[in-house]
Image (cartoon, rainbow, N blue to C red; front, side):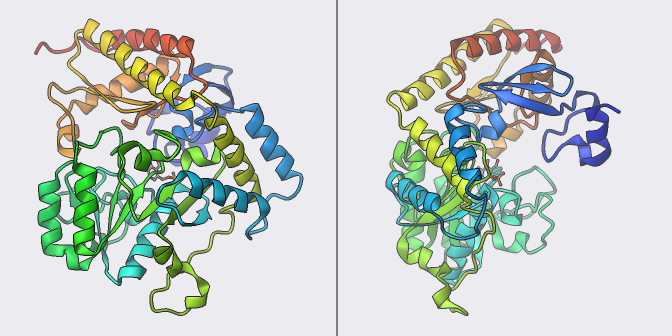
Length: 427
Ligand SMILES: Cc1ncc(COP(=O)(O)O)c(C=O)c1O
């Protein structure tokens, strides 16, 4: 039996989540280096997902590996604050504008979930407002309102396979980039709402000028905790993430992905008075939220994170990431135009995404109105051409390892992949 067959026999859809590939395309990855990965058949791919953005410095970076290996020989986990965790807590709080106190967890899912629980405990309110289409991790609120799903009465979020019926009642979904509708929903439900959670760069959609600032004002007005999900944007758009990049400071922030340099690590952090609700001296409450993560803040992940942040602190890194992203999006535009495609190129910083749409894509409704069947066909064709990515409509991630040759290589493969699609319909 091949590894593909073995994977298909044991993993639903042959994957550990997402991808949703046709069985014959399911790859089993053997190793990675820089911006390339190899599967168990020996096939080389140019990696444009980079472990869904968690390996921002490139696969198997020698400095990250050295830091993690050295630490592993001293013990992998103590489920307790350790030397590396203290160093990392100080580093993250020095970079993140809103972080006065922090706790480590093992994933972005836990980080956003804890932000919401802290907000609920601190305010004593049950509801959460998120933006339609947002993914904040695999907990029920994280996936609510993410998919098209069955329709619910707006502003109540579609459970999107959340497996939790309370979601419909307690999760409100507003259209991203629409301050007026958000304000209307909060005028009705603000007194019951604990948190507004937003991914500042919503998937790959940039905030309209004034949107994040407006959310800051609205949440203050209603006494609601503003949570930034910076699992993607953290340490990627700027050293201080989207808060620094867009100049809006939330009350709480969730980190994951790039922070751990590929090792499992997340963090939630923010205003000291809010973070105090997880202080065990408050047990059994009121205003107490239970928070404990067995592997969160393990010293190996923290050592890898410190090495990652050292690499990201080197001169020219962020201008380089932004220049690479702009260059990639420009070249993608050229190729799509040349192929006669009607498409929007989304993204900011080292992120990009294609939407087959004649009109701008700014929120979930305009994204759903784009030709997503063509989008998926293109991503599958890219995979067949040798680009490793996630074809569930997710973004393309660049890393420090993507040099000009990698971008040029991708552009050639994009042209080849477009040629595999049926001709675009005129107009
Ligand atoms: C914006 C955002 N938040 C949260 C998460 C969940 O992170 P994790 O997969 O580490 O649980 C993701 C994962 O893709 C994400 O993109």
